[in-house]
Image 1 (tube, one colour):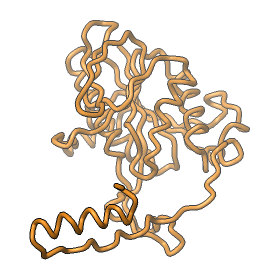
Image 2 (spheres, rainbow, N blue to C red):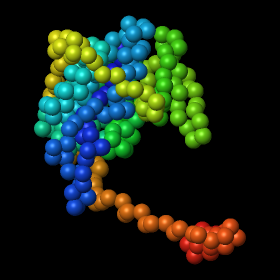
Image 3 (cartoon, rainbow, N blue to C red):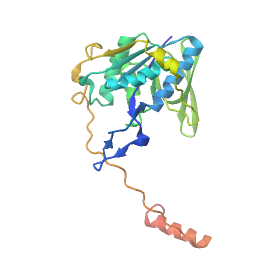
Image 4 (tube, helix red, strand yellow):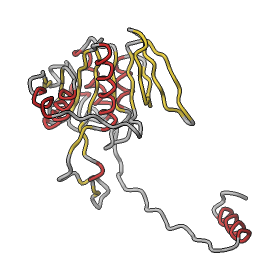
Length: 262
């Protein structure tokens, strides 16, 4: 069995500050492996441990993105691929999905593609589904768990409003995963980090994946960001120190003023 996991290096948003124009201030902010991608990698490695599957990791970004691929290799991935070239810079989710899908076709064969539900620096949740669309394979999104039922069948636990849905799907398939609140993301020990330096890490350009450069970068991205701004700060609520009857009447009056109730 062959599994491909798509990874992204992102700024640690817990330490990101905003510029006055509403854009992210990235200077001096450490980069990390996107948490949802980290969880997807952990699930791939669980399947590898049970079945002996081959796990390959794929990312697109500047040369420093190799750091998250090395982390994946240290955790147990077998091969790593980095799409790195100026032509990829500025790609939106559509152009990114196009590039990654071209790489997937070159890395093939594959039975399963795992992606994080979304990246913490964008929160679009678009790239995974768009890769599936480019490859013309089924997809299941917002999953919290996966289990290989048979050699060619997978069970996915999909998060839905009010609970979960268990879906059975035939391979190949693309799954996007969201990290459960109680899941501890794994990290390698020093020995594994050292041994990861000996595993293959390939760097590819658009020529290597036979990509049309007109579909990459800013010029190949249909998305146009018109404006970026932080949300308006929440206003302080009203504190009512009245009797129960007076409080209820006051709340109804406030709701009527805001046309929530008649």
